[in-house]
Image (cartoon, rainbow, N blue to C red; front, side, top):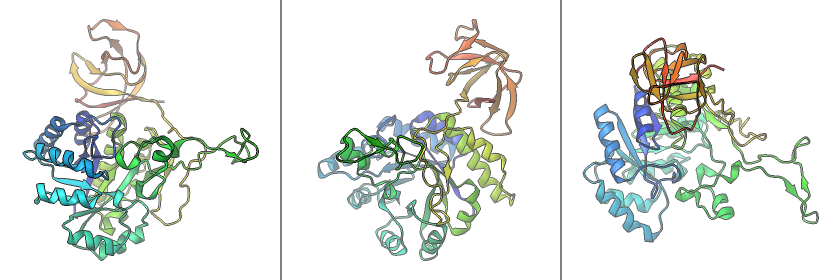
Amino acid sequence: MKNPELLAPAGDLEKLRVALAFGADAVYCGTPDFSLRVGENKFGVPEIRQAVALCRAAKKKIYLTVNTYPRDSEFKKLENFLTKIKSTPPDAFIFSDLGVLSVLQKYFPKIAKHLSVQANSVNSQTVKMWGKLGVKRIILARELSLKEIQTIVKANLKMEFETFVHGAICMSYSGRCLLSNFLTGRDANRGKCAQPCRWKYSLVEEKRAGEFLPIEEDGQGSYILNSRDLCLIEKISQLVKAGVCSFKIEGRNKTVGYLATIVRAYRRALDDFAAGRKFDQNLWHEIQTTGNRDFTLGFFDGSLKNLQNYERSAGENPQNFLGLTEKWKDGFALLQPKNQLSKGVKIEAVPPVGELQKLEILELRDEKFTEIAIAHGGQKSKVWVKLKKELPVRTLIRKIN
């Protein structure tokens, strides 16, 4: 494709609006019942209908995930759900299961079908067979190298190909993990993963119960299953030339601050490539302002280097995201504080469109417009922040560390 698609996650309607505002060409979302994101998922049928309307108004696309592996007892519920959204269909459905595809073809024969990464598409013959069944796009397995992607695309020129370029990576084969179900009873393949791959582990010899043996010389435990986060922002040009038409960001459960920052960075990288400009190294600064587990290229170059983070499970979180502006009034921006704000704090204002600005918080007021000294992150009430320059709605505010 001449204009590759930037595809962003939407865990709720506000995140959907943010993704569109900061440059996504399309979003993907799903209800807790049939997508692989149960926790923090705010979408029901009314929200799906509203999401479709928002994307239509913005002339952007929306893809609905139905990518779980349902049991026989769940198909009636799936058909009832599809009946309810019949009048407001998405631009495509993302699915994994062959039985789900048959139901989608029955209810939405003219709507595009995209094969989920969960289906483990790693060779040309698999892609050809899915094409014969009416699938329009393949979301390629994360285990593929660039060379393997090129081979698959060349053998299937009539198909569309999508690949993940940023976000958390599951340690199991294309995300099809049994660890969570085995250890906690929460099935990762049905959207309930407890993320045991992020837990800290030690070795125990069977005759020395309770005696934990260090896996590393200087540690009492190690995150032996804990992957770094994927980041392919510098590889955009190679993926476009390989024939990838859609670049997917992971993170339906991430914050709006994370979403806005990452979408904006990849939007700029894609636009720079389209304009023939070199990769802007400043985009690395943008990405590093978000929480992460350190970055890896994954399987991209086939080297399999720096895949694991053995030292920590939780991502490095700079805690510099202060909020998104909701309105502007008499020199003040209204926002919901995400971390502590106070007078005199130096900030960067990152608008959906245009360049970032370095400013200072001149004054704080509560919702009743009474002056206050500090606003704490996580509080339910919103605050008015006085700034020197007027800012657009949904401008990202972050503290300069």
